[in-house]
Image (tube, rainbow, N blue to C red; front, side, top):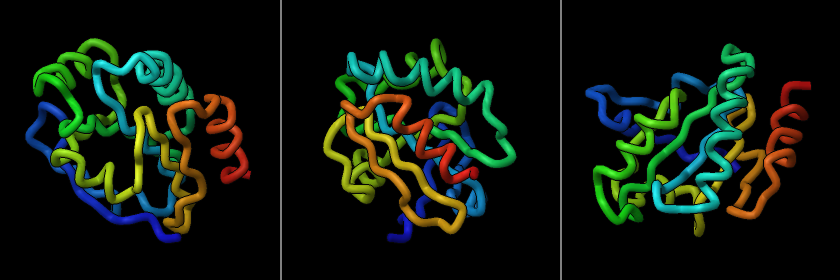
Length: 138
């Protein structure tokens, strides 16, 4: 299945990210909210991966699901404290729903042809996601 295309603002910045510019790379999207204990376990692992992976071949981004936040500033505060990778602000839950997510964190892996290669829910082991990325890189 082709991955739905979208553009969203970078959280706390005056820039727009368009997924089309990264088609051709493996794209890893993680949907999250600041109050989620599973996100607090998952996001530091993704942040470490972001710092060590070849960014010419893999694009890691996170999307704060603003429609599930209890406080609109909480996502920005979390991002500023803990994340260096590109972090987008969902328009409520529009992209989250577009990708048929039903929990956080949810991770979507998109292959180099723009197809969804993996859809991982909140209980997916981190190494399973890393294995999927590795299989796409050959």
